[in-house]
Length: 297
Ligand code: PRT
Ligand code: ZN
Image 1 (cartoon, helix red, strand yellow):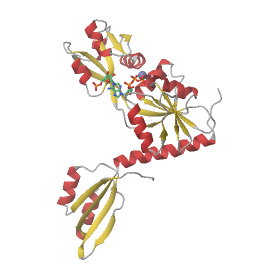
Image 2 (cartoon, protein in one colour; image 1 turned 180 degrees about the vertical axis):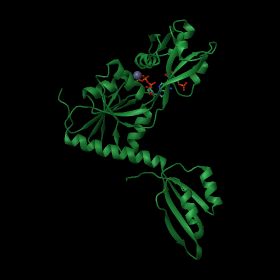
Image 3 (cartoon, helix red, strand yellow; image 1 turned 120 degrees about the vertical axis):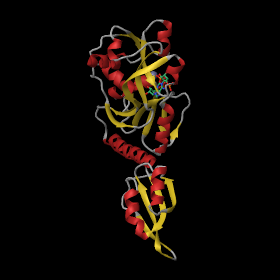
Image 4 (cartoon, helix red, strand yellow; image 1 turned 30 degrees about the vertical axis):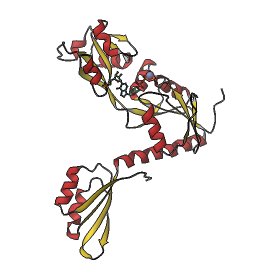
């Protein structure tokens, strides 16, 4: 198969829990996606990029083999694939994307007591992640069997086919609905950006550089806020100290008010109500906190 030399190919989940946020991130990055209903590819109109729409389980392998140059997938799927292949087929992880956070947890029926990890010795645990689980048990010196299941893992103890489960937990509602208790988080996951280790053309490398800088801009603009307030000039040193993660603020004079100033600053950390209250106590008034839509450092 002749791979396109200039258009970057990114493997993304076609449908599922990762898909919505993946598309939201790509759109926030300024990509204009031309959807092709039922097709394998979506073409990006304003950058030389094609999206390859697949099941998430195929993404680590496709990126490793160079079928896709980049891929977006959960760390749980990436790790399980790499361990299942004795770490011989590990694509490069180049960025944590900060969405699809979840945990891989060991859970027991509520009726069971739990003291420590040794309770899992000689037990059978149903999971879709046998390699992550066995690697974890090996480190802890635990000897247990795994029952590999794909889907509805949480029903295994009720069916009497496993003593416990090891599954992805997000809100905990699924465990609760099935009479299970979360006793141990063994792996924390979020969406990752993978890159192939195969050689890439200069055009593709340039597109990746541009994309990474835009991802970083999206990440920063999510966390960063623009804050504005009025204050007596004498309060400036105290207010500057209170501004979370701000560079030197812009100070402007207020027409007709000799001793008052307006302060504007970009805060690279969340601005909480507590911070605003402290600013007010230190003399600020008319405090406004605004979101930043785009940032390019
Ligand atoms: O069809 P395809 O193979 O592409 O998708 P899939 O069905 O294998 O995966 P999908 O779409 O369900 O999940 C994709 C990825 O989203 C996972 O690999 C995780 O990285 C991430 N993710 C985030 C989750 C969850 N949250 C999640 N809650 N994946 C699964 N769940 C399931 C979990 O398995 C359990 O059944 O949700 C249930 C638990 O949720 P709570 O909220 O009740 O605790
Ligand atoms: Zn899957």
